[in-house]
View 1 (cartoon, rainbow, N blue to C red):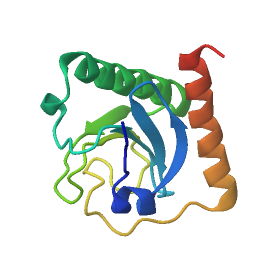
View 2 (tube, one colour):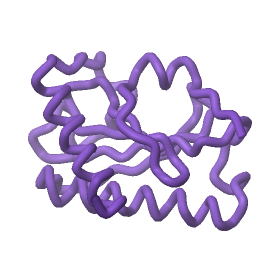
View 3 (tube, rainbow, N blue to C red):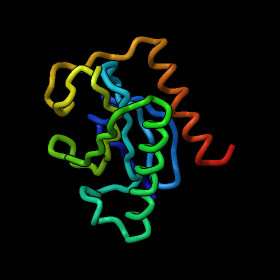
View 4 (cartoon, helix red, strand yellow):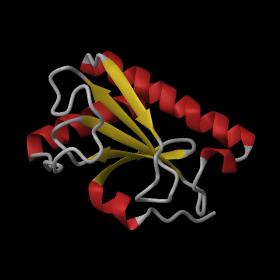
Length: 139
């Protein structure tokens, strides 16, 4: 089965790893600790379009990532969303939020411009997400 990542997702994010169902990617925005999970299925816009076992796996991966990110970032709240208004390909945002972030308590969407991650911050976030991958794969 082939999988093609939407061009906007490819442009706005950095590849981290391939999980059982999803591609894990880091949002290239220094203002937030923000990851995306994209089921590796073409022509899927909504989670209900996935077969039941894949839909269950999607939400397992979302929950595992959310719990990990909250534990390792000290986030006060995890924001999870699958809007898809601008990018129709099914993807789930997992964002660690805190009172100190740029838009608290408002949403991250449509608030200012993304600030690309500097090299050190990018590497630190990639390392964090790789730790998540290692943890769930049991390595």
